[in-house]
Image 1 (cartoon, rainbow, N blue to C red):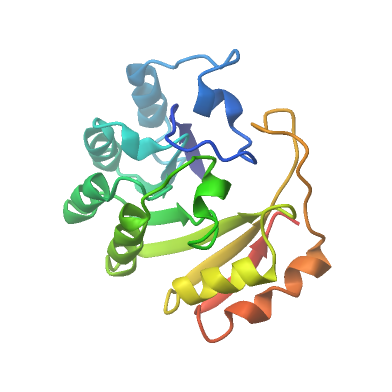
Image 2 (cartoon, rainbow, N blue to C red; image 1 turned 90 degrees about the horizontal axis):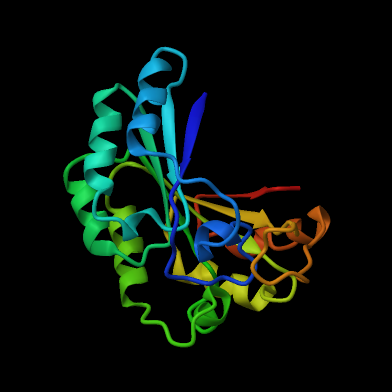
Length: 213
């Protein structure tokens, strides 16, 4: 059983993102004081076994290493979700042995990455560095793509498979429309359609699976 901490702010504007208020800083989401979060986690030692830090994009915050260290001192395992755009901080976290598990979002293949990330221009070098850091870290990790019918097809997913060749774990996450999506109107694939994409990853990824269906 784990607690999830949502961190505000993001440098991407993925149109299919379902955390619009966190990313854009809009809406009625309250800001919870740090001490309140830490007090909550202290009280639940022995009940919870881990904490997932997600966003937004947590690595935008320079206080992240100190925050994770405090959580680890409480005895928790820590899972970090990231978009991989800050490999410098990621390298620091890994060098200090802070995250126990990392999940990195892969928005699309190289050619279509900027479009899926909702930015006009994107340097993929930090993304590649983060992929390399995570794969060589020795800790548990996963790569994952939220699959949107209007943004992903077999050709694009095949490109991702080739890009991530040799990785251990990859998930296809089915898109789900809700009222908090940055740009409503996208649609999802059916489970049967997603299953037809799995063979694209055979021979490239150790384990590929589907979530959200």
